[in-house]
Length: 79
Image (cartoon, rainbow, N blue to C red; front, side, top):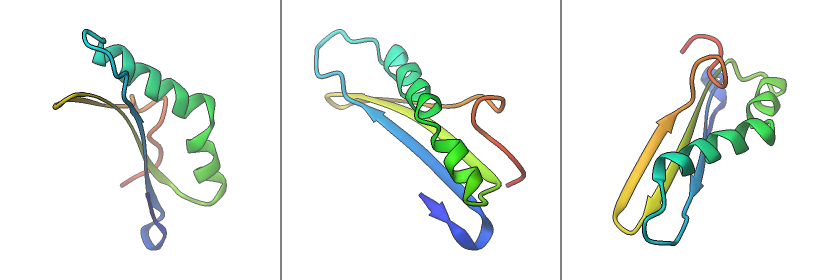
């Protein structure tokens, strides 16, 4: 999601493992790794976005876990 006027963006990668007993924490980590691997943050920086937050989310049934990337891996600039 982009907010061009304030040069802010949020990247959300969602995982749905679809099997009982899945580790949602690991799925969130995998989602954050995908954001890094696909260089979503870097692409936004090239577009001029200066404040970028990255979230990894995992869902299983009605259970959800969401993790914010560490500052060093995703967030940049001021907010």
